[in-house]
Length: 121
Ligand SMILES: [Zn+2]
Image 1 (cartoon, rainbow, N blue to C red):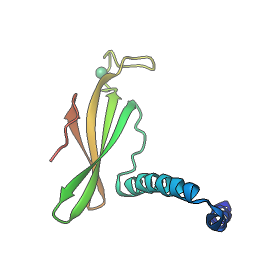
Image 2 (spheres, rainbow, N blue to C red):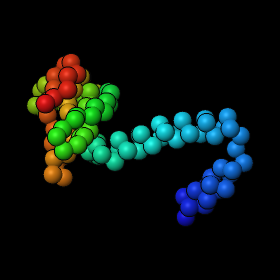
Image 3 (cartoon, helix red, strand yellow):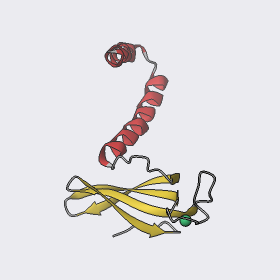
């Protein structure tokens, strides 16, 4: 509901903008749109327990049929081994390491990348 009325308000306000405001809005909208499109094409990740996401990057992979966006996450992880330094609430997590995530036929895939970010094949 509020989304629709916000949208209507926005549209009604458009003709009242100055050229400068319209330009500014146009460029802001461009980057908002880019973010939204990225989110729509990248796998939504559920926060996994014992993982801490340090950094997130989106990298487009050009393929024959189009573009897939791979999501790269720098993560600190808890390996789950008993007695490891990472065990427990205050344990020291491993990493950080990069992991790649993408969707293939609707399935979420992931791959370990390593300490340094490099795009996977
Ligand atoms: Zn560990």
